[in-house]
Image 1: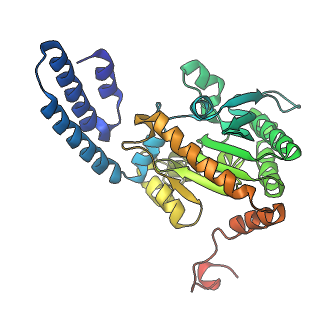
Image 2 (image 1 turned 90 degrees about the vertical axis):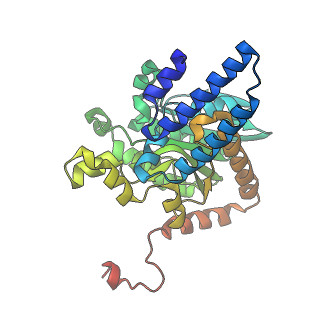
Image 3 (image 1 turned 135 degrees about the vertical axis):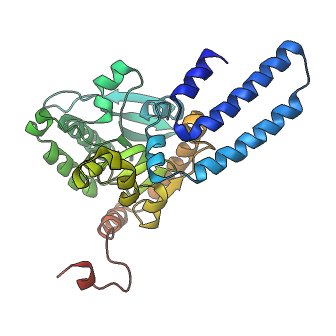
Length: 335
């Protein structure tokens, strides 16, 4: 067993262990066939078919908590991967003209397939050093102010806005609160409703609390199949309701945070299917699927008059959370 594969097996997700073991067996058979010139193609094909079948079965039965774990996978494509693999050109823009440049949010002018747009996304970082510098994707108020400045620039240039959401939540430290964290997020949410350009938001991993909503008001909101979008992280919910961190799995189920739940309740417009076994198993394939969805939505939204776009955007979000048909306001506690 190679050192790399041994490390993957040791650090892999618990429910993925059988899949990793099978992948290692396939790799060992390939090496054996190469070194001994034995014809093991039949055995390898059989194992590969079994692996595909078992992977589909495992991922079809993931619990909400297991989906949260997949959404946080270290090898899952991040905003930096989409910038590198999806765009033809990208020029990063920095700073909020008030305090500093928050690395937890990246902004810049992007071009893809001949279409120019403003890209804004949470940045988690890949190495330990980068993750610390980016606060693991938890933005400060200057990050949200930077995002809004670039959105205003996009409006001035009359180009669309595309946002990538991937954060457990906004940074909760005292310094962030002193510099107006809640106000910065609220200002962004209000301003995005009035921006006179198309806005597309994609949840690519974690979509936690106001930290996600601060760049999440879009004409079209998509989510990757194994990402999540929630008012709070499962751990935060468990700490508040049960005062116990080991209740995170129960909290995840209660929060209805999976892509299927979100589509069912009309909180997202589309669920982007991930490659078999999750985005972390096929980064490029995932990027291509997201690219296709963004391209389709950009073309669709470009055809709409601005006033129609704004009217639909307002209606979209004001309709969320309304009582189901046949349920009276009194029944849901509205007097």
